[in-house]
Length: 277
Image 1 (cartoon, rainbow, N blue to C red):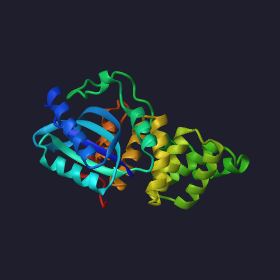
Image 2 (image 1 turned 90 degrees about the vertical axis):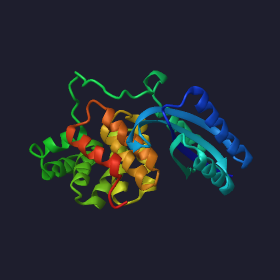
Image 3 (image 1 turned 45 degrees about the vertical axis):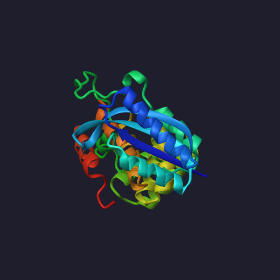
Image 4 (image 1 turned 30 degrees about the vertical axis):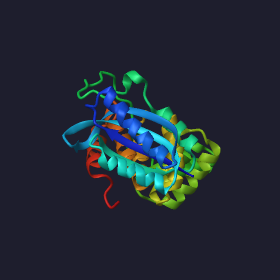
């Protein structure tokens, strides 16, 4: 049997009884087609990327199960008859338990699963993002300065990451940046910023499966970082996991320290997706 992930969005107006009935029917479709449900999670009520059947919000669910082509066909038939499922997607996964554990780690506490339709601006000062650091550094340190620093200490993982990431942002010397990031990762394999950088480098060279491995870990380590969530959303989109991609992009819009220019770009992504994809 193949390991599969099902993500579906239900109408937020469903009563508890109606939702229970819907889930019961889906589970019956699973069992009658020799599928087996292994894990099920509720992400909660979230804003949709665009209006679907008059709904601006939906309730996200993620199930992990084993099954065959027959199971997938039966589920597709079931969803085709249901007016209460706004969107759904089924994809193959390599390791059910690993994927499920990752998803569980991202689910907010129960009291935080309902996203408010309006929220007040946070009074807390915005933290400086990694992109801001890099942008400000252009006037403070040139590539020559950083390369000179590496000559003095070629094993400084943070300088390697700092320089390599700035090159990635400029689409400059991608292969050399990748080599530097691999060295930095060997030196500091648990640093979330280095993990994010090397994952993004794999994305840029279009190795999306390898990129997903690193960015998934970066999200686990920094679940509230706008850049990491944005990067992970991009990779999921390329892997045709588009419902999940929009979920992580929407996460970026909920963070207080997301800059205005990033919000503009994310708003376009959640509606149009990645261009040329």
